[in-house]
Length: 285
Image (tube, rainbow, N blue to C red; front, top):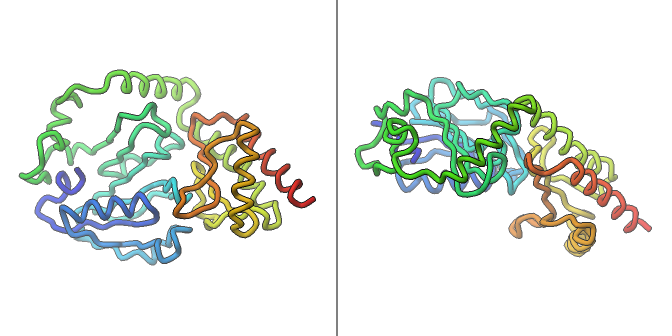
């Protein structure tokens, strides 16, 4: 949808590639336009977000795309990219609703629902009215992909997934009653700090490969014993006995990864921190 709704008369879009999902977005967009890697975090194995002084932004680009949080790589933007007058687009699938966002600095923010918004099967897009006017929309854009068509129809050009929309509404109401996005920002910071403190205080037993300035609050990556796969497996097996599941990172990167979306209770994170400490003490013995 992005190139078909935002290209207009231009042919190129800039992509800040900092992990798996931004890389996939860039590769997908290549089917419809020229994509330019304004930032290539793969050079550092997606373990940091290169400083903006290293970006090669094109002031004539149709838009700049970034992924605010890379779930698999454990990398998160803790700032809004400064891209001048070029429309800014963000994939916030895994961290939208986890903190306040500078919405007005974006032409589009999109997210699938399963992380913090509600159940899977729903997607949310916050699109600037200048874009929904349709002046940048390509003639070949299918009607069901047209943001103008969607906006003109009040987001109901086709039958919406009503149950998923209802559940998202409940999440939004709960957030408002709990104190707004500041509530989730505080919770996210508290939960991620519990795990990072164990990692940083383990004298190298646990290692987070992500640079501290780019560490994700939503997805904490770590390896055990300098990447010992046997220790990883032993840790994960022991964790399951303590009712702590799904701690294995993607097989392409190895190690462990802890997802700390809004629905994860603090008690569960405290239990994991305790398990990490006791496992380290057990191995040391």
